[in-house]
Length: 390
Ligand SMILES: [Zn+2]
Ligand SMILES: [Zn+2]
Image 1 (cartoon, rainbow, N blue to C red):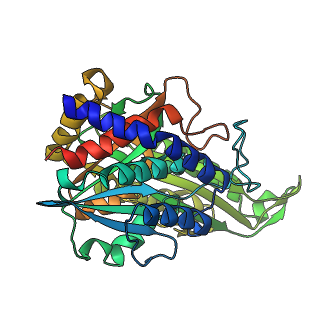
Image 2 (spheres, rainbow, N blue to C red; image 1 turned 180 degrees about the vertical axis):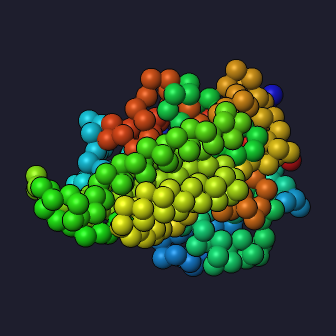
């Protein structure tokens, strides 16, 4: 296990800089496709390591290639970059300097882990069998930046990767532990907007108006029953209506009502069943009430993030050797949150794993969430281990 302690030493030598870099990135949170300052920081750091940065594909992505001295596979390591339109409430001395924006999903920590990995591995080229591709990817949140990167042909660029790995900080898991599972680990997302229209009218004369609110209420309740029957522990599904907009006064039926919601599932066949049920129930309740409906999908859909079973064994071996057996849980639960790394894993075998932030920890997207610096070292160990264990 000597090599593990040597690697740990190398990581500890860069850790103070990496922690500081994370705090710097934390102060400049930028939302999807606006990660310009973030991108410049990463680029400067990689260049100072002697890693040439490639031309950006989406404007703000930062990609670099590190060639090992020995032959071997090309492995892609990815960190997401974007922040959220949330007012930070962490009390950290290095809190966001961009009012109304914060790294409440901890992507600052993911970038710091990958920068630390690049710093350590670039000192160990003689021990690397193969090539490492570093991908700092924009727009993970709601804009599916990974999908655009894949469509741009990034994965076909030489040297072509044959495996991919990514991590996400995870509240509720002991700090620095790794949780993972075979198969789907993050759900597919299909957000939708339903616009209902019909004759408005005086609230005192309901027989002359279309009661969109009543019809929508029946629709929402029926949809909940449908999902409750569809979802099983083995194949969970969720469909939540999270916004209703319509009407203004006590006594007028609105002529328009807008519902927004999100469907989450693990395979497309289940997604099709949910989409089918939405159509069927809208027909049943809205058309029957004399109204009209339209369903739109204004946000990009996300596919499920599905881990490769064989490569999961590699992740387990690395976690057990480098972090210790007690830091590994391969029986983690699939989250119904989404993740655009799924688009990369559609093209390449790979693994996405959760890095523990602590057991009693604010949730992701909570204004109090702040990536736990204590997990940086193990995050870097995992990423380096995945490259060095060949
Ligand atoms: Zn997020
Ligand atoms: Zn995230």
